[in-house]
Length: 330
Image (tube, rainbow, N blue to C red; front, side, top):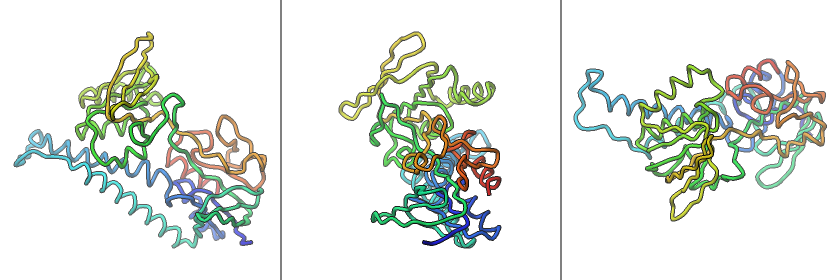
């Protein structure tokens, strides 16, 4: 059995920062990752989304070039496939950069799904189903979160999609309904509207981006109106029926009024769900509350030798927050 000072489960902005910092402090470190190095943020979240938004910004600037004293011959037209391809290239490049940093700092990357076997043992199941057990003085859980799916509007990956599919659609939809106006919903709504899609946002709370300040929500609402994005607040999507490739969306407002919308794609952006399943938390007695691991100010769990950071602990689910937590934890 191979021994480490630290084993990190998950290589997102929390996991890889924790691993590199521990290695810099001359610890023997391994990272267990079941998917792409860099995690959701780098591969399927913040980074590729910002790349899409940059393309949208360039297109909007070119469309209004005359307002800036610039004359263009002919009209600017977005190449949706090329925009998506650029976004994926940016994400892949940065993922390779993180892989390089891990290698440079002598961090061992173990491909597979990690599970706590005890407070000092991690069992890793690889793609072939082979299980290998590794030992560590300290284990840091940094497994992040995934797109949450509503029971009444389950994602099918084709017509009712999450953020992963929204980043890699093969063609630009003519119409889209976005469920939720948090960071994910608002960013992708703006991107698709900029590309030419007719977008409607349905938000359950009384205003857009409900976790942000009132003045930010008001400013964003004005920007969305100017961009031609329709918003419905204090409203909920009751059901989505797909018929002949068209989504029929039933929306109910605060006064129980029902509105029927039709669109090509429904984007479900109703928040994220923590990745705690199959981690061995119950077997090892790690305390969990409301889907989050309970930790102290130094990200220790109630079990000696086990720590947790990032989206799986209470606090803002943000990349830079996870990275800071990683440094404090290490």
